[in-house]
Amino acid sequence: MKIWIDVVNSPHAHFFKGIIRELEKEGHEILVTAREFDGLTDILDMLGIDYYVVGKHGGSTLEGKLIASAERQYKLAKLIIEEKPDLCVYKNSPEAPRVAYGLGIPTIGFADNDTAVPVNKLMLPFTNRVIYPKAIDAYDLIRCGADVNSLRPINGFPELAHLYGFKPNTAPLKELGLEKYSYIVMRTEPVKANYFNVDEEKSILEGVIPLLPDIPIVLFPRTEEQAKRFEHFENVIIPKRITDSLSLLYYAKLMIGAGGTMNREALALGTPAISTYPGKLLAVTKWLISLGIEYHSTNPIEVASKAWEMTRKNGAYRNYIRSIVSALENPIDVMLEEIETYEEMGTFTSQEESKVKTH
Image (cartoon, rainbow, N blue to C red; front, side, top):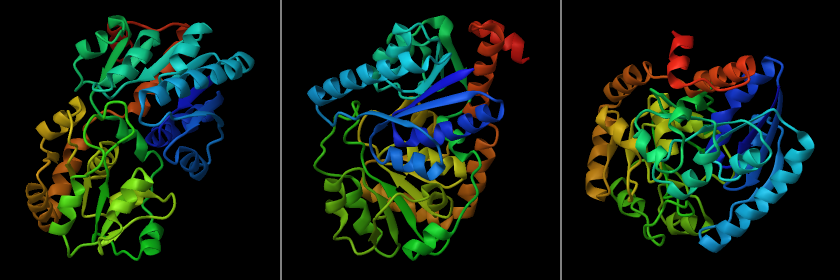
């Protein structure tokens, strides 16, 4: 089969790398499309994945998002008409499902953000099989247009797929002058995301860092404006280029993130994580908190206090996180199974039929 995979955000490169490699091993022809956004193409280059650049992110305004999305949909349509794939696969893509639907191409999509309602409304009605973490209430997907018969929940979270082929590497630490388990990683707020509606001019992390003056902090800002706000902190290190962030997370004492992906990557690796996201929490985040493997607060003093506790009891936290995560379902296995099922049957089974097939 010729399988089209649309990659629209930098974490999605890590999500799909294992799926791409396994499909290639099985002899499938893979067509990858990507947009210019947040270093995505640099990560794909680092991973050795071939791709077509089609369009770009529209920025933080509604007008910019609309125009960029419309332009990308047009460019994708022209490419896909020429390439003629048999199946389209994506994660939270607003353009690929509409192009695939218009051209009669079957689709498999992964949805993990119940708060990204606009993207979900553009994606879910045109997706034949929707795979999603069971932490999300299925009704939230159905009210955005998902067909109830398209839904397949998994007992896991998407960042487990990011660990495909991962081997920790100390080179990024040496490049930044760091020792193993001697530093904290931080990630700023996702100010360009359609679901982010909190003040863009300040970050909760600006109040946390002064309370952690004695430990190096590797900070990953999302914009140049964010980077400038943290340059004056003496213990903050901002990588100058795309780096192996998974290895940095693996050897970190702790991850503190105002977004979500890097927090969950840390947990997948067994590294403790604190969420400081200032808006409505994802269902997945709430679930991880309920499991006792993630902590959330937007109070700098509470965050710093929890950070000191997690660094003092680092081994105990890591052991508990790994014991929970080891029992979860990996999205790679589920995505590959659904693709195999479609290849064999030429259609998608219902949830009940899928359960019979897998048991």
